[in-house]
Length: 231
Image (cartoon, rainbow, N blue to C red; front, side, top):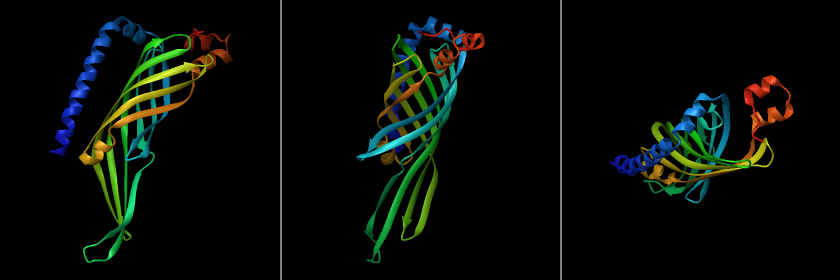
């Protein structure tokens, strides 16, 4: 079937990515052990990732909550949805020879889980590898001459590998950008293939732990919880 045809190359891509991760994990085993044994902080994220489908900008918004271990590894999950539903409308001939107006709309939402591993970090720059998995449902809505036909509940699965770059302007303020790729597996194979595309996002970042240390430099409680400062 179409789904099986789409799933086969995606399987090999995922397998190859995990093969690379296993190599990195071997090289950074001591670093990972130290990170998971270090202090934990809350990792809250609002992300807007953009891509293009048929020349249209597609925005997927997500809200995530997780845990950061030793300022090195972040693990968590969240909720994501298509913030720019795809719409198509037009006048089409009907079977009885008349002209009808049809409008189609497609959207989706899903639960996501992520792992973020920082593999390079200095005073100003930070590079990390991100992996995100998602599972949810899509909705296809058709409006034909005022009659609505909604098809919901089609399962969908996503896999988004990405590289994140962050630059600190001050201790607690900086900018970041993410470049990755979205692989989508959907029952509507042709439609799902349209969402297989590069992803990008950019924005202003705030390091809340460094901000707390800057505001309360003499607080023993803050220093014990978030310190020492990286600068």
